[in-house]
Length: 297
Image 1 (tube, rainbow, N blue to C red):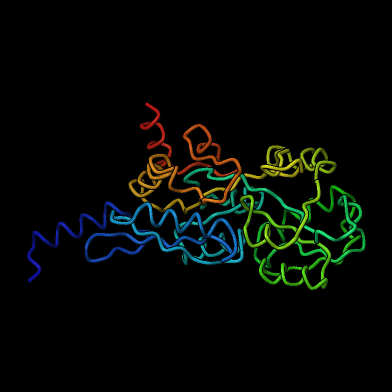
Image 2 (tube, rainbow, N blue to C red; image 1 turned 180 degrees about the vertical axis):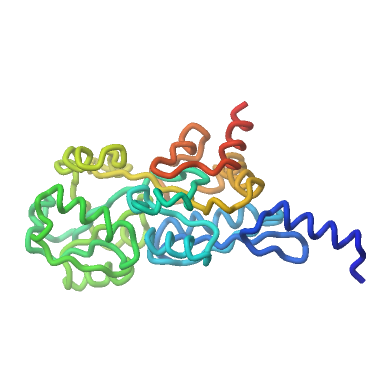
């Protein structure tokens, strides 16, 4: 029988969690996490976050998606409570005031991959070529790749396609396409083991930074001499997520940072307080900001 005392305890747990997320009978809150493609790094991050919170009052439910723009749509529609997005893919959604960030979690490396046996050596060699710009719902396809081609003066100079990474790799190996642009952690095993080379994007970075200040870094693919574009990956939520849940997530990012990095990832991780708070162009959730301030002392 549900006594008055038990009812009040359960009701209090739901209030503490806030209105966003699904609360179970035990007081556990489930947050659906729109992450990324099955072959990518960010679904792995979501799965690691789920493992890091296992046994607590917070349950993370990772969702496979086709990228940043789809993630944001799911978040704004109320079909997810958390989402990963490249900072450049947020655009006008940041100005609407609904989106806030829990933290800046990863450096995203833009990878221009061609077959290892191809004759391409620089981006400009791909004029007239068949290039996959990314998955249909990804920020890379919708924003980053378009900006890259524009910076190189090649907006109308390629046969641009969109398809998921697994299909892109198969098409590249079968010589149905000439190149793939992919944005994720580095290396992405499915791509890295597919007999590819990575072309430098160094020559277009100055124009990209001039046209879109504050969004793009000049980095190298870790463990290589290939210059490329880096863009921050943000862990987003809506402003109606409770301060308590946002603070709990922030503390997990800091306290369990080592557990949240995929084994193969060589690149820069932002899982420390100084980097986590750099969430431009999205404001930080007040609950997360308070947690970082308390952790920093």
